[in-house]
Amino acid sequence: MKLLETWVKAPFLKDASLLLVGKCVQDVYPDLYERFVEDCIVLTSCPEAESVGSIIGKLASILTCSKPREIRVLTIDGSPHCFFLHAALNQSLFLTGLNIPSQHFVVVDGKVVEVSPESVMLGRYLHLVQRCIENHSQILEELGNYSLEHRCSLKRR
Image 1 (tube, rainbow, N blue to C red):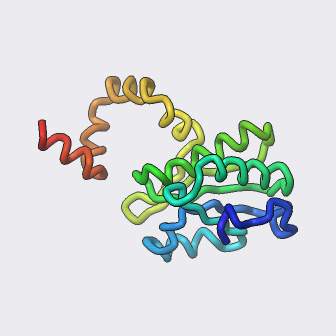
Image 2: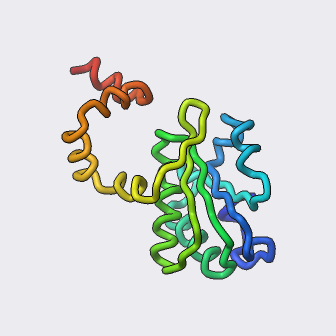
């Protein structure tokens, strides 16, 4: 069901295991999607098509009103709009002050990889990302394995 169309006090949300998933994951990686949805209440969202502020507000309201047991996010890595679902979860937990167990997962090369909440937070502070690049310049080679944008940028130089 869609995150923004779900009532924040729906009885099935209370003490549930929630999965916030990027809408495209189900279509692009159906096998991975099926593995993750077992025993979860699935809430889909696409920040490219939905209001960013509405996503945070709805998620924070669900956390406050329904107090789920846990929440996980699953998106496709490298998608600029999917990244926001991870940031929205961090922001919602911050705003509510709740200590609900959470996990962040991204699909990379057809495999699911867990990332820390701190990696999501770091992505918001570009000057710190720049420092990481300066201290670990080999990471740009790895970026070239994933980012068409980066490879095109290198060709233009």
